[in-house]
Image (tube, rainbow over all chains, first blue to last red; front, side):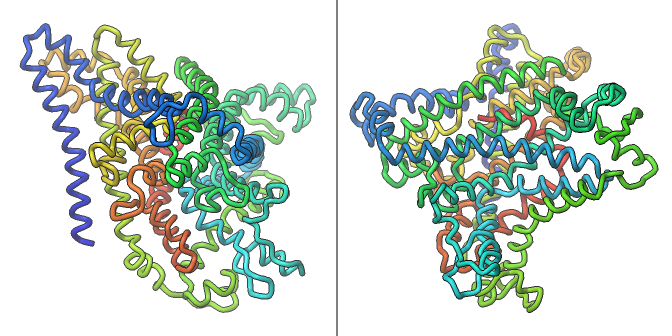
Length: 327
Length: 307
């Protein structure tokens, strides 16, 4: 353990120190140049490492992934559109797409609704209660999907009938006199997929709540009062005055959650690994890569995912820039 | 994100509504309770209860003896209290979570600090130096926010294979540095461009080089932005499973997320170990989160565009 810690500290220091030395050297190098050239070259030396990692970790891989998606499983021969054709005609992948689609349909909308409800209700509590309530709802965001997996196994666990149940949900079900249900294997009506979505909701509603709550508090009081003077009731005020004014935030949160859901991987991987009809795109990508060792399929899945995500991301970045501009 | 990053706290507003919205805070000035209806109050606390129950179950189980934890539900502790610390020591040493815990730090610290340094230098250049194609380059970097990091896995795995880097710490550091770079440059450059230009000008007149100006002036002044990105990136890296699985995989260098997911996979290890392991993996992010919540919210808001 001690050697482990020491070697970890040394690696950390080497990594951070190395980065520092790199900049120091780059700076020293540029100072060897005559004054005029120094001013010209220095900015590029400062941004060079950043550009290098971006090129190596995003630009080159994006290009390479597209190339690999047209090659066979170990990237040694071209296969044309075969990977895409195979995927899009396989019933497994249809299933995966259908599940992912369900996630996209359910999770962002429910996240927003829950986030709004909690934000509005908590806003009416005293400030100390509001803070406590919000911290509790927000806390799961700090917990990894793996942590959430350990937490939620206690809700969904199933034991054979007659044995005492360890999972809370089955404890309730058996208390009511029914037989225990193996929740995570119950794929009728995709019950198990919906139960996995509950975990993500648990983890993400806090995120939506914090942003929406901040937006609601930012709504100018005079607009609320004006509506009240005009005789609007509370529901009308919420629907016609508050919601339109926080629309941008709602959309931003919606898009953010949607992108996250499209790439969902770890919750499914930890809970079911995509078995029992719960597979999603992220998990299938991982399994093509590490279980089936098929680079071609894996790359094709990523390209499809990228094509689906890019419009959302473009919207998001534009939105972000527009709001930064008004800061 | 002006409206979300710096919300106007309703409690400081002098104008008060008397209806549902803002009604609750009207008498906060006197330190009194909010005027929420009992229904609203109970709904909120009921939701909070639902949110916290799974965590409570996990915490309780992690302190239960093996026998109890695996044969009946955690709620039985209320009638039959029986606790032990054995699970934590067993998970920590026998199941290798202690090593994984150290590995997580070895991965997360450089993967947080190096991109900040790299991004801060680039942001400095974009904010304070003049050079050709500056705005074009900056726009290109921001545009890269749209590329999802999934694209990197297949090509980089092959590249790492050639250099025997798979399974090493630098393999993940570099990946996280790449994935976080666009966002970091973007946040930091926007923050730096709001700093007073006169300070930099006068430093220049006093003969300070860019390198000195950067370290002595700009970095200390940028602490709020640096902190919010650092917290966001640290939690992101610490909680990450996919990147670690792809580039390190299970083994000597595995971080805590992989170690715990392995534990979950081996059901015979028992509930008491899985829960103890899960809690060990959560303790650091939860502490970071609770103590730095304010910065974290800011980073999160900005991070909503991370690809």
